[in-house]
Image 1: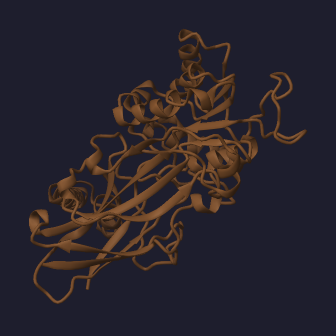
Image 2 (image 1 turned 180 degrees about the horizontal axis):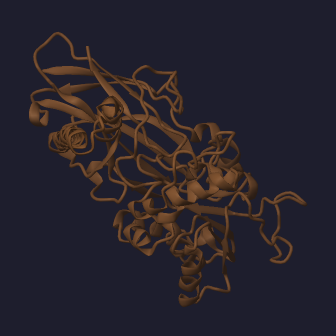
Image 3 (image 1 turned 30 degrees about the horizontal axis):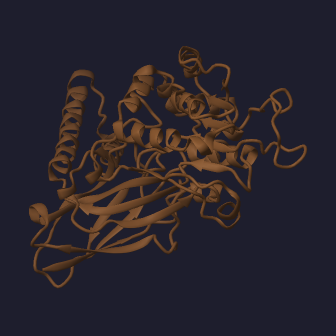
Length: 430
């Protein structure tokens, strides 16, 4: 028996006006925030997580916006424990290693930029693959560790670690004898490497920085992006244990609130019950309406995944980096679910993940002029096994049974926030 699950809409905006089904939510897991950084949390009056123009703070934010973005995002990447989490991700490491070390003819004598170098390992690989010069850009204090790694691996004569925002730096073009694609210009980089991808690809805002770096430094006709293409997927899933756990935790925190109100009234003579609705809203947003990290198995995916966004890293724009717009061709989709084969007999929610390709350029200009590369591939899909990205799941507030009714229709709305919050959702069964 086949039932159709209809899903509609992604709205990349911080405004609630575009969709009555949308709501702001706190991140369910650390991405551009970290528990270890929350000691730096600012008051709401001080908090400014984007610039006045709506861009990421490292691009055109004032000092307050930059300080907030550092506390909420860059702080975690400045710590070795976080770097180690990524370095022990075998799928991640193997894909980049194959892409770089598997293309020595492409890297030989080239100028490479590693945007967000972190520990510096990609820059070291680029040097070992034959690059003439590698610029490893890192905003955080991790740059000091990267310099140590570069020196310890004997490539300090090739790799230069530069600490700063990639939007602000200038390369020593004349001093290093670099040859711009156009006389007097800054397009001197042959290959741009970056591990910029966040949870569900776009949960972090680093894509903006990569695009700006590409437009400022990468040779337009022959330059290569690693990865070269990225694709976002979504599918209905069965994940009742985690969905029920979220509901249980929400119920528990509301019970705790009731006890708090009663004790405050009896012990201190103050009634805090007037704040109950706002507290309930906050907890629903956190526990029930925001996406969360999951490590799903292939058997939990109930239908063929749908592509909802594709990025050509050589040509994508800052507008593309904002997410998925309502009305885009791939923003509306439906799923056919075989109720007889569906694990658990119900839909718990929707899960999103991404893939990244390392392959030759496919655009009109680069396809004809850029070097051809031996391809590599990275997948964060359930069937690919563990990655630190996992999958992002947005749960229905109640499970949707696959029962023999005339039709099952679910409306899905999501917001990809500009303030580094992933997205939130409501499911409505029609």
